[in-house]
Image (cartoon, rainbow over all chains, first blue to last red; front, top):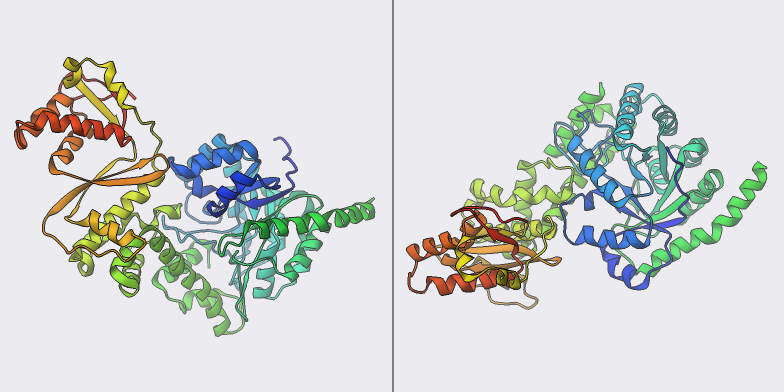
Length: 281
Length: 271
């Protein structure tokens, strides 16, 4: 399989910003779409996507592959996903380390899994089959979680690393999700970042979350907070010049605010990467 | 607990709203029962909040008609009875009109059911399959004596609805910016067509004879056969003129995507 391109700095493509993007052609290197929003027969969303695709690289990010579900792989879903891949020719395709339902039901949420050998074997097998079907390596993202299971046999970063090695898949590391889950479960976010295998990480997500006091929720409706920026610097130092983006899915601010968050990445990254590369040399 | 058992228990508790389900809470790692319930409660609450968001987004006029409190009741009833079976959240609300007809508490709400049917059809039209509308000039390629054999193909988004009388007018009042007066309920039914024009969903009420004609045309009947049927069922003398006007309307609305000559009374237009 061909190596994936280095894309730079991206944003989530959301209808709230369609007109502004078309009229101003902003300095964004690429856009990420929610795959399912375009897995439809026709109409405005697909027509707009083709217009954006003519001007920008696109990556496809799914929310309902349900890779960890014990239900059989949904071949209708995968077939529709493949049709969209063939139509849009994205730089890459990603989804989450999560399940969304069983027995044919879909809860439209990224549900947590016990970090067990059984779950690892199951997920590795399914990622491999999806990659074979799509004819490409996929990226799997760490989801924010609000519960962990007593029967877990390893840390989430151990699970991710083993999964990526065995399935030969790539990783989409969501820095905000690491922060949220570390708060909710009391582990070290720094230990997590330091342990994820560098060679598999292809993309970083950044987003805002909601602080509920005793726990935090991954809401994507706030600016990225300072502790997550600090963790981002650590991730950037470790993973180098991989593609990064800001996710915003609610409480949409003026587009300029998202561009300013991207600019912050562009401003801080060169010095971090240069220093890391010099140290490595 | 095996992965399959855990997922079944977790899902069952989310669907039933059992935030303190003992099987699920016993499987969690937090030291106190309160912490375990708080974490699991995030999933239980989020499921209902998301479902309510989907329904609110797809049925704004219905919400306006019922009011916040009764709409919330409808959401609770629907969510409890209709776990999503689609990977795409966009289809979660698809069964709401049928649910209202089949659920005793909502069966008597004819106006609300009509508005729900219309709004759902508009949502479906928004991202229905593509079709390129034919211009009226396409008819000029056929000599008038060939028109009786003409058959039509319609935009894939086109749906015909039978809804309680006054539904279209009520929907317009509910969707208007100002406080437009709501029409009073009327007896009987009315027909409406819903389709996509360009990128935007469109609709209009249909008279009885146009509904009949369009329904037959959608079924592949030739223009001549439709004329005969409308003449038989309606006013024979004025039928040809009315049919000609319907045809012009179908073209100008962008409903017709192909026309051709059928073999007999029935046929399909080549796309």
